[in-house]
Image (cartoon, rainbow, N blue to C red):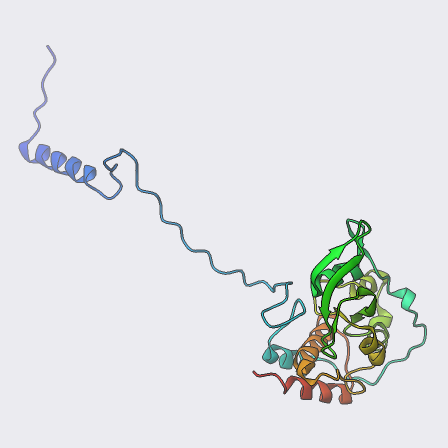
Length: 241
């Protein structure tokens, strides 16, 4: 028979008390034998810029007026550049976006309501409200896709030095407020003019127009002229905040 080892009464009591405490702790199994579910920690909201139109805006990538003012202040002021060597063909558009759709058709669907397409991705019905003049159109053929900062304006403010890939991205930008569907009449009235030479006839659109133009120029590192900067300031001053 093996030798018995005596255990002091105080030690034994301490062991029994510790075991009892362990069974009554918060991690002890419940009546059903399962541990209570772990509490999920709320994830912080995504702080990345959203490419979708913000509330009240019709264009993606829009920023608040205060941000646009900061962007405008940081833009380099320079005289109007030369148009030497310019050609629209140097800005590949419209690019294919998949499912037989090119950039024009993507914008028509994005900016319209109730848009239906045919088998070739052409808009055959829908309703569009033109930002520049407030006109409502139900015929896609009467809508143009405008480059907020026109290709020629981009060329004379910095794009002349870009490679073909960057010019293509500029001409087909779906992330920034560079493309929008407007009436053909308003688009052709604008032409390639900067804000000091042409403003949307619907003054209620000036806040969006000023923010969009400034953001595009800031995103692509394009320059502004003094009169252009002054008019953009006037447009941003029409914003509520």
